Image 1 (cartoon, rainbow, N blue to C red):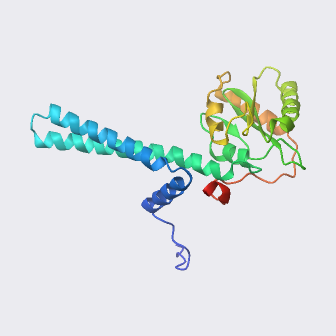
Image 2 (spheres, rainbow, N blue to C red; image 1 turned 180 degrees about the vertical axis):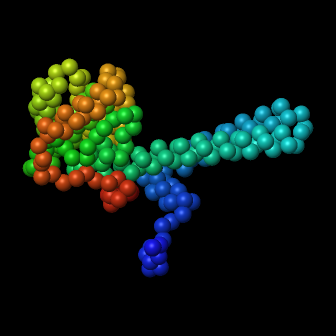
Image 3 (tube, rainbow, N blue to C red; image 1 turned 90 degrees about the horizontal axis):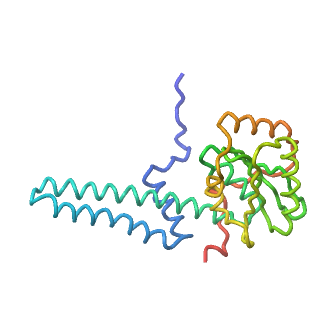
Length: 236
């Protein structure tokens, strides 16, 4: 029996409206995004126009094709820039909050990396935490908090993983604003840059091995970067 839609239920915004909302959010946190999008849009259009005048020999149909190709290429590049800048703006909203690294591991990983929004170690007083991700580059342990407080936590987790998986490479990454740490939005790229040493089946085996040994911790889940409330200080 077919289900009837509730007329009182809120209607989801269309694709264009969603893109406009993403653009507005991105422009609010990154004022240079709109100008960069305009630049990457105009560049292919101007190139297409130049090629049209140079190669078309006065043929109006050929000129139109070159211009349309330039416009389509410009739109594609502008959307790519918008997507990357929007992701960075979303991470900027939760940067510095407990659970931010977990949100990135849950929603922002590519390249075959497997992450979990739940930390493997946490300090209940300071909310400092260590997260774990497994990929073709081995095991990555990622700290969230000042390095003066998280270094020991990282070393402890590294010893635990090395004891269970002695032949798997382990990479330590600190997320924050300290010297030697990386910013939150650079975490997915940092993971992709790690040299590959495992096959896909080995990645799954390592992940299952570590998950089977991990004890459950009463720790709140990470933050959804698309639902996080913006911090007033970063709006200014």
